[in-house]
Length: 120
Image (cartoon, rainbow, N blue to C red; front, side, top):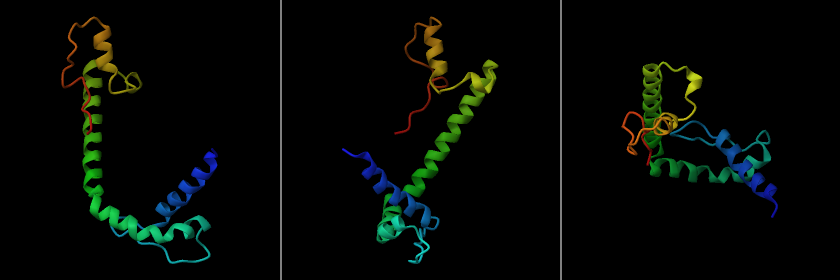
């Protein structure tokens, strides 16, 4: 199986994403010789992209994901400050929870402040 074929297929749609205008309009560029060939091949998918954007509610979901990401970052910064750690001391959200277990804590239920909230 030649994965190069899949990469070429994907590249056309990524190029389309860059060629479209910003949401919510996602305006397609006019057809011209200035557009890359890959974009010209998939430009007819632009109306489907707009329809998906409108029906999926992705704009609201992205806002919720961004808020959750910011809240998690704030929580980790507070935790880092409380423990006197530098920025490079915490490399993943589960590190504090894992360290607490490794330090001999018998509880297998981390506190809300130590276990990262999972996005569903």
